[in-house]
Length: 257
Image (cartoon, rainbow, N blue to C red):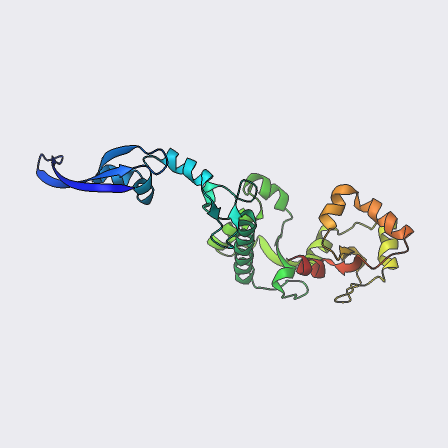
């Protein structure tokens, strides 16, 4: 906190004399009072040094005072605050902002590469994904883009269109990956038991059909049991449709996004 100021004569590196403003400050955390020159006042961090004698006092003060998320306004605490690195924002808002940034980046790259599946013509952004023409995606992620798919999409955005990449929908991408492979017996039975077609679009290729959790609890259920165990359970229960349905990969990803 600023208490008073005064002008003092000082000299610069060329030994020229001039008047300089000095600030007498009181730290709002530890109460320390000290004179600061204009240069030190700026070096210490601008607005921070106006209220605190050091960055350490500022950190301690921010942990003790009541803070609100600048986006949703909830009171921040150790459980919902992402930390001082991301300023005053809760974990939920931070997660939502990152998701919005990711979808914006995906849309930009997909539109740059044509905006539709090169095999079937699917044009809904939520159904499309970047495919490695030479099937070397796993190797490239290990060697070049270790921070996940965002690294690849940032590179694609900043560089000219490459012939090593193409746009496929989730259905066509999975069919390309599963070429020459077959479904297990239990999965075929599950798909037939639920009608054999996607409930949203009518897709009938069994290779791209799967069980969708209507309540959004698929991840939680997979952590508790293997998918084959779930299929056996659904078969014994007579293929119940209360919490589960049959969707293709395109429709499943549209709902989850």
